[in-house]
Image (tube, rainbow, N blue to C red; front, side, top):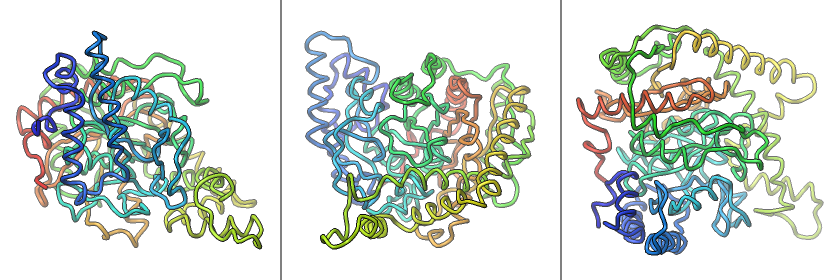
Length: 497
């Protein structure tokens, strides 16, 4: 059964459905892989062995009873540790939630279980999703399976690393400024940020509520589409959830084509600071799209140059509000409660001990930006820039069907290289942030390896809000062409651990 870990999610589901393998056998194979390699990779914070086997046995029982199984039934999945899971620890990569056992499931968690997906455990992440490298986790960094001395991206590096190291065929991440797409790019996997509101945020612990969005991570475009369809859809428990049909993402992934599409290359996403090997793979992708029948034009979105600054005012402002709930009074860590201290003193001591440096940095930035006398100058101005970015997207999508760019300016950098330079770290999300500010949909998929270091490069595809199916239509066509010409970075040139 060792070869089952190299199969796609679609293949595994088909074989579980026809009885070639059982869900229990598939789950045991992936649990064995986790036991064999995760000590080196550190993709998981918690492995729920018994819970996973129980879910797998339930799928096998349903099949034995003659029930029709869903398109992902019996497929193992790694869940980012930002989604609540009833009876299973949820930490957000932070000491302040160490040992907390949620009494309820997030909507995404519940929908995965209803689909028969087997949840293997919870993956490592930057603390409260604040970071671009998974180095701010209170439980230590995750390694990139292509080179364990390098970062796997962030904040969802654990989910991407789990897929790239064959510990799971599927994973769930969250994307606030690129935290699904950037890890996908540097690990050679597929990551999708759905339209904001397309996937419920209920039970997804908030960092920046107007930006956060859960989404699928996989090794192929079709697998990502199947997972997208399983978790998406309206949820009355989430006031920002879109009450509309889920776009036909699976159909698009099965019938990928770019013939007749107008594709816009974003002028602002190239130039100084972009690694030569990244741009070489991107330029090859542009030429490939032309060969496949797309019309490629250059598009200018001048406000994108201000996106990074706007994001790092809006996101910290919202996080300073959201993280106020971690006060030592209701759940999680409590420090200094000796009986002689006030609630305010206990809260201060707990937050000082429980939050890491990056979280504290962003709380302070956000509190300052929202303070009296500075609100209009900082937070208010950032929201105006956000409007300009949305208008740039609207103009661009009036002329083209999708936009493309590199996902990240560079390949994976070394662990520790940027940890003391917040600005250099923030630049890792340069290409991904505008999409979050506007609420559009976007995907990163592998487009080869950089010449300088042999590490994966990601191609970013951006679509208008509620046109998520365009990502899969273009992504599937590009993936098939890449695989025919150069091979798939994780199916033919997989990293050896």
